[in-house]
Each structure stands twice: as C-alpha cells, then as structure tokens.
Amino acid sequence: MNTSVTIAGVTFQNPVMTASGTFGSGMEYGEFVDLNRLGAVVTKGVANVPWQGNETPRVAETYGGMLNAIGLQNPGIDTFIARDLAFLQDYDTRVIVNVCGRSIEDYLEVVERLGDEKRVDLLEINVSCPNVKEGAIAFGQKTEALEEITRRIKEKAVQPVIMKLSPNVTDIVEMAKAAEAAGADAISLINTITGMKIDIYRKKFALANKTGGLSGPAIKPVAVRMVYQAAHAVSIPVIGMGGIANAEDAIEFLMAGATAVAVGAMNFVNPYTTVETIEGIEAYMKQQKVEDIHELIGCVE
Image 1 (cartoon, rainbow, N blue to C red):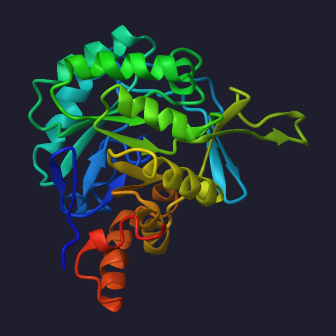
Image 2 (image 1 turned 90 degrees about the horizontal axis):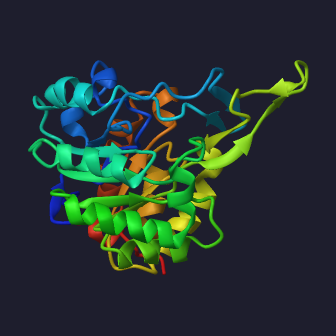
C-alpha cells in the first residue's frame, strides 16, 4: 500500500503534515507525537527579526472553531536556526519552513538565510495572515502583489516554494493562477477566514485586535470548495487545509484534488490528531482496497 506523495520533487512518506502556527516547530508536540510518522513538520512563521505579535487577548473560542490574532509572534531567524532547526535534525521527516515578513525585502532576507540550511526541504510563504496589519494583507489579496512577491522569492530561493493563499478574496482561482504564473512550485490553502466575536456582557471585542482568523471544523466546507477550485485551475500541487479533524476530513480534501493535507486547529484539541489521521487514512485504504493513495487524489470531478 503506497501512501507517499511528491511535491516539487520532494517525496513525503504520507500526505499528512501540520499547519503552520498550530504545532510550534515540532518540539512543542514531541512528547505526544512521533514526528517521524508525519509527512512533514510545517513550522510556525519565522521573520528576519523577532516579532512580539498583537496585544492580548489573542485567542477566542467560537462555535465549531476558534479565532486567533496572534500576529505571527516569532523569535526571528537567528533563534529559529539555532534552536528549532537544530532540534529537527534528529528526526526523519520532511521540514517545511513558513516564512513571514512586512516587506518583500524581509521575506527575501529569511529565504536567503534558509538557502544554506540542508534540513529545510521546502519553503511556505505566508502572504495571507489576516491579523497582521502590514504586508500580508496587501500581498495575499491582490494578484499583482502576489505575482511580484512570488517571482522575487523564486529568484532567490534554493528550496521549492509553496505560496499560502488567503480565502479572504473575491476569486480563489484568480489567486491560484497568479501564484502559478509567477513560478510557485505549489500552493497551500486555505489560511484562516477573517472573523469577529463580541463579548455581550463586557460589551467589548473578544480579541484586542477586534478581528482574527477563524479556523477549525466550522470552515471545512469552505476550504474543501476552494481547494477543489484551485486544484482544478492549476497544474502545480495543492496542499489542502482548513478544519481537518480526522481521516475522513483529510480524504475529502484529497478527493477534491489536494496532493497533501495539513492539520491545524485540531492540534490544540487533540495533540494526537495528525497520527490518528495518518492511521485512519491507512485503515480506509485497506477497507476500500486502495493500493495507491493517488487513486484518491482528485478522484471526484
């Protein structure tokens, strides 16, 4: 039974990875999850310098999901390389580093620093975080800006480049095609959907940032639809995410056309979700007598 998939020339032992920002850089979940079982560890976003993130409160629970406005808090590239990448050296899994920035130059600085790091298999470029005021909104919601940053990063990147797309756009197909046209090796979607919650007793916003990114099972139908549309509009691989809680959810994304999937918010609910999803896909394949996972990828037209 073959569960391996290939993205931009890189082979993954299975299609299940972690969604950026929900798994730290692997160290935080090492006591719960055998990282060697994962298709890939996708790290939390890293910038050229440390970011403090947004004011608190930054997380609020919602029906079927959660809102977050962390603001991409991170220790910066120096600490990331010395601490997080060094930790991942001991594990036999693919490593995808999520990169964030406030300007194209910020992104390029991180991309160039990571070019010498053999432990990094691919880069995921976060141009779509809805709760960072600078950079991400402009890059992730305008085709011209997406094309420019994708092209500039591809000129400097040593590793293959995945562009992470925002669902907060008029036409996801237009954005997917723009990323492909500019040279992206793959795309990942969806990032969180912009949302808001108000505490009616305090008469205040639940988040200091007022708005945040909605994730969790509540967004899955939207994510499946967008992944289907994007996967049928471009020829590069698509990594699907958004509300995956179990193997059944993951298989939906695969059937919609995703080559791989990422588990996000459910890591906070059940830290074993990734491995349980991998085991569930294998059990489904045995039950349905599917010998190769590619029989499932894009099988629903």
